[in-house]
Amino acid sequence: MRSRIIMSMLVGATLLASTLLGASPAQSASSADIPAEFGTDWHDPVTAAPPVTKPGGTSCEVTVAEAQFKDFTPYKGEYAPQRACGDRWSKVVLRLDGKVKGRQYDRLGYLHIGGVEVFRTSTPQPSPDGIEWSVEKDITRYSDTLRTTQPVEMLIGNVVDDTYTGIIDVKVTLTFYAGGPDATKTPDRVLTLQDGTLTTPRNSERIVAEVYATGSGGGCEEYWYLTVPDPAPYSCKADDGPYREVQISVDGQLAGIAAPFPTVWTGGWSNPFLWYVVPGPRAFDIKPVEYDLTPFAGLLNDGRPHRVEVSVVGVPEGQTGWSTPVNVLVWQDAKSKYVSGALTKVRAGDLANSSTYTPGSQHRLDTEGGHRLTVAGYVNTSRGRVATTVSRELTNTSVHTWADGENPDALKATWTDNETVTVEGHGPARTTRTHRTYTMDGTTTLGAGDRLRTVLTLGDRAATTEMRGGRRATWSRLDDTYTGDATYTANVPRDQRHAVGTTNERYRLSGSGGCYGRSLVTVQGMLTEDRYGC
Image (cartoon, rainbow, N blue to C red):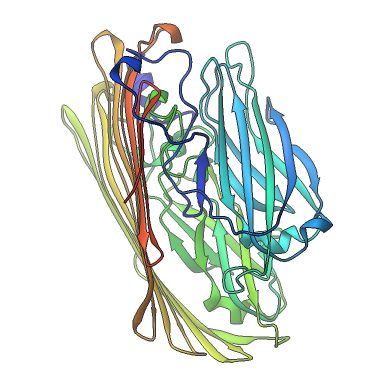
């Protein structure tokens, strides 16, 4: 039983302009207010990420989905634009309000409008007395889809029976804020793949693909970063070890690479008491991987369908567990019917992926992986030739150690995803550099009396600099760090677990636009600190 429990780490499984709401700032609780252990109720879920900023002026709200999820039957409805909302918006904000009570695992969900995936999420695990939570997301980029009547499909796959009683009750609304959109940020068209192919407008001058890539759905790919190759004696196997890379190709040619974010769902690391109030970064609002495909615009603009495929490097052949829906955002040249161009460079480095197993009383797997890709091309716009070069470099290092019976079981890992996009033509050259770093450092141990303890730190960091004509124009730096330490008695009914836990999230976003900071601390499900400031 001990081996099975430790093996099940993560089974049952923030966006810059997104936040989980659900609690007003709290004053620090006194020690007398903190229970000795978890009870039957705890604070509603909350994260430290900033709320979506909303413009002033008039707004209009539309409900797009309202459902109770009891099984794997999707909600299907229709979105119809309201005349009162107009058709030009400075911002569109999606809001999900949810509630659930009883007993339930964490569940994954999505919302499609007109076939476009506008939101991907997971759910918190409820208290017996019930919880409520909310998530907001800026979806202005999907404005093209929202201007016409569209079918709606939403699913949060769930199982309700005599044991797992939690019915997930959600309502999703869109709020439209009047005003003109930022044309540089809001695409003219939002496309989806048709039978795996993409046909772009012939006057496309910028093309960006976004992929909501998640390793999920049960099985070992839900916690891919812990997999090991043979002959290492561990319960989750992958021929090439834990290195994963999300690739996109156009007509069989590699067009983009990215490191997947190591999302930890709210049942993660065998310890739901880590996540009852403060979830891990991005758990409730899954950020898509983005690929700038503008270098391929000259090829894609021929009016014919082109095959676009997404694959995940490292997944054992024939094994499921990854979801990779694709949206394609297109900016068009309004003064041209046809934008010609050419792909001038595709230079991919060798894929590095090495896992070294060292046997012993403490088994150890050392992994190093990485990849480089540069693509370049140009388009002949009505304003002249514009050349785009995209360079991306990925690295991953991890040390996974475990004893017999996978107790203890520990991982220390770092992923980097560094991207440089240079655009030349029509004004000063523009270069945007983004350095992303994801970290995970955790240990799970089953000790005396079947006391299961998990200690875990997660990091989501990014630094972005935009240069124009060789001078820094804008910059931002994100540091979202979660830490948790929780213990409970395994293999006993819920009311006998005697769980204790502390969690902390510190979110800091600074840059040329100012600084936002917030810190949260919980003890036994009580929010004991909610502090703002950088």
